[in-house]
Amino acid sequence: MIGFIRGKLVSKTPPQLVVDVQGVGYEVEAPMTTFYDLPPLGEELLLHTHLVVREDAHILFAFSTEPDRLMFRTLIKVNGVGPKLALTILSGQSAEEFYRCIHDSDVQALVRLPGVGKKTAERLIIEMQDRLPDVKETTGNSEQSRGKTTQETSNPKQEAISALCALGYKSQDASKMVQNVSVENKSCEEIIRLALQWVASK
Image (cartoon, rainbow, N blue to C red; front, side, top):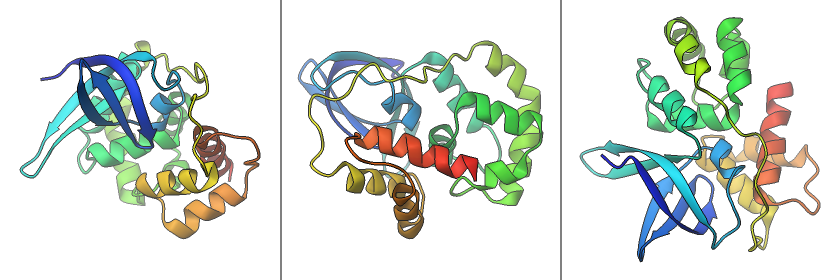
């Protein structure tokens, strides 16, 4: 098991990161909560990781905080929730919003997330309510980014749309999400954050 990796941030294309660890580039997948907290490209960072082994691939998921990883591991224990869906849930809502959905049994808020139908939302509420107190006690997500990337993408708007599609949103929905927020002079991560906030407020 790989518990964490420490190295230089080489590239970031949500939901994927590449981290150079002593000359070896680790490709990892991360939720948007981690992207919001990334240092500029070329700087060192430490990511808490969870390795998923499948017949056709070994996938390393990475998180900026231990509580984020704990939440991920708790989510994938829920029947019908795999790593990809857990990543989408962590990307689409802040920890506080997720807690509120579970505590208030807010099915409608959960089904706004791609891949979460009514049955999955109801299952999340039932199974997470018993596990939520332990997770909440140790969770302290950072909502602010430590700094903008030193290498801006040529088209942050299009990068944001592509990233939202990678998170599970349909292309048409992703475009609509981005069109409904102000994108001028904003990075890809900032556009994604605003787009996800727009969906949550509907």
